[in-house]
Length: 83
Image (tube, rainbow, N blue to C red):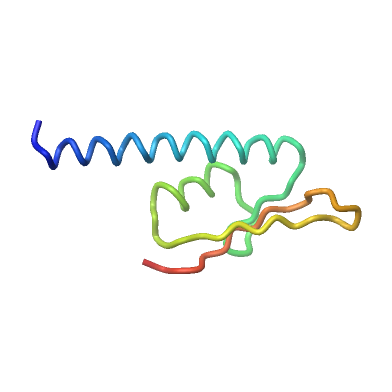
């Protein structure tokens, strides 16, 4: 295996781990009824993970929005830097 192939393999493994961790976290929030948005539009956990981890078309910031009683009601993913 060449150094380039080795590096590509490491990147794939890293993405898979990031993908799994973020998807698991977002699914838990989604199951609790927390609204998820991506660039101002409602989005599924899978779509958010695909955009933020797989496509990497920019860097995203997540904002955790509470309701009037301090309970989490929404997580917004907004692009902060395009690539």
